[in-house]
Length: 263
Image (cartoon, rainbow, N blue to C red; front, side, top):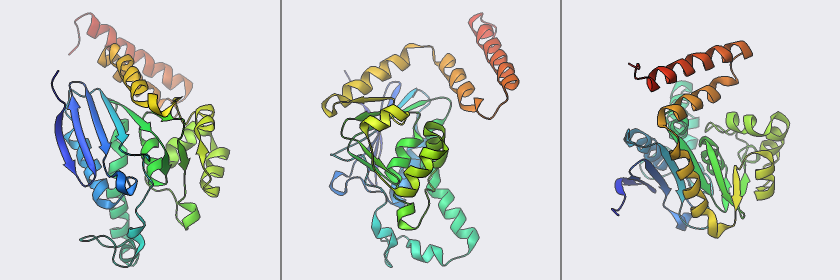
């Protein structure tokens, strides 16, 4: 058995690839995997370096916490070394601030690409940006000690790292509003009951559960999974009749491919 290939190791992010499975690891447990603009750039780079052979992308974290969220140093006057502080960004032009936030969001957007299925393996705290990073993935397998919280509103901010859309689709408007506005913790039982977690297991079984799910996802032909994911992702924005049309078109592509008539 060969060791996974290391494609990226920078700013608290590691990307390794083992055949059809890529693993992105949050690798700063001493700071509970707190996030920063440098980490977000590394996450975006991981998405760009993902090889075409990858079918499943696993997001995991070292240590007891998945991610404690944004490193509060971002809000100090000095910010991070070599980075503008968030306070300086707020004093700048609207266009520059919007562009900077859009750059941060890139770290959270590629996980739902149709050609991959992403799984977040979440243990311990997943707070703020950590919660949003878990929400960026297609699926979440959680340890029974998981604690989700959206703390941005409590700090006078809003969740701006693409987390509001998946949160709303998973738990509905009323619960999403209550979770965000109160900043309270969502524990394992509620996470599984409301759909935030696809599966909750004892912490010692987290890695094994993710391996089993990965194997199940890889069992089906890749193109069929890609077409199915695209259908499900776009269904909410279509009418019933439009979805029927999309299903027919997708099935026609699959039948032609299976018959050896694909392009």
